[in-house]
Amino acid sequence: MSWRWALARRVATLVGSSTGGGSGAAQAQRLFSSSGALLGRHFPPASQIRNEERQDPFELVADELSILANRLRSMVAAEVPKLASAAEYFFKMGAEGKRFRPTVLLLMASALKFPVSESTEGGVFSMLASTLRTRQQNIAEITEMIHVASLLHDDVLDDADTRRGVTSLNCIMGNKLSVLAGDFLLSRACVALAALGNTEVVSLMATAVEHLVTGETMQISTSREQRRSMEYYLQKTYYKTASLISNSCKAVAILAGHTADVSLLAYEYGRNLGLAFQLIDDVLDFTGTSASLGKGSLSDIRHGIITAPMLYAMEEFPQLHDVIDQGFDNPANVELALDYLQKSRGIERTKELAQEHVNLAIKAIEALPDSDDEDVLISRRALIDITQRVITRTK
Image (cartoon, rainbow, N blue to C red; front, side, top):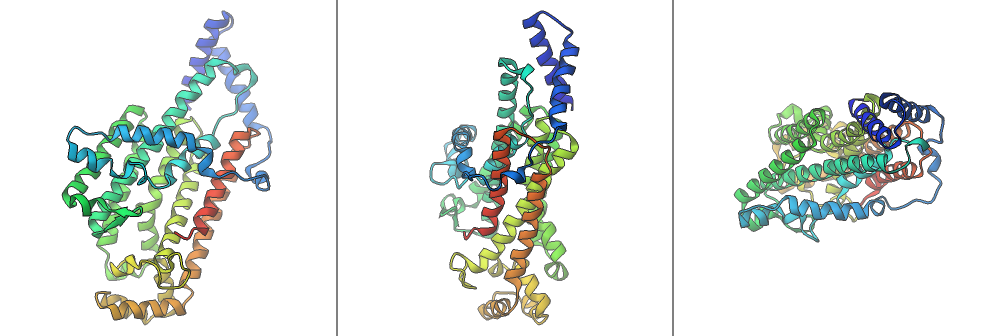
């Protein structure tokens, strides 16, 4: 609420100076009384635009993504040539990925846009809205830098040789420079975060970074009992995948001055979207793009990482416990585990769990304050569409 009050005072001051009449505080009160009235009125919820013509969520923010990509490339520039080359490796044209997280955050910013009464039309509010949008774009940039830093570190830990369809950085420049490049990106993210000047947002994003480290540690240091625990797996998955996007969504809402309840809805959308994303990722590790079991990369199981499909299979076939306890250095154990998985409903149950989280993400969007703003409704529809893309993706 402090940001909204500051905005109100700024608008009141500027309006008062331009019109020469009325108390600034009174005009601020009228501004947010009219906005509050708009929020209290009943407008069609996001669910009512489901049958309208759908637009590609990524195309809706394509222009902004292009701007963000250029800014990111300039933000990761470094004085030392080798460090500069390493840091910008996944920000170069062709190696950027789909920019999933920035897309979600830009759409969330639009989905949470405040309604504006006619009395605030003109340049004053437009200027402040533009400033807010830039700050929300900064969250998208910070999130992407943190995410790419985590990828660089993960590839070293996993001894990966590819990433985003290209050779991984650790294979090209070695582990040491990959780790340093990840650290450099985190430091640049910290500088950008500090520039926002919002301690609550700083705390959220710092927590997300802490969770990334915690999740990775949980993955490489599991006990026998923990490897068999669905609760442990889901907690680790939240830390490694869902925390960053959920806390970033919440940060976008906080910067816009929304209430704790609305900020929590943004967080819940990100949390459930992130969990669904990773659950489908774990399915694809077994199924790949061929839809035939065992044709995926099998990266997790070969590294001894037990994910939801295998955990569900263990419930149906307890004898899988012994196979998993023996480890997967022996290729015969990999084949035996896959055989049990194929006989089980592990893949289907994991997809069902992902769908449950998708449904919760959709409910979070539909619970946002009603609006009749077309851009807001289109953005909320796009956020819902993204959940469907996550659940139906094949790569």
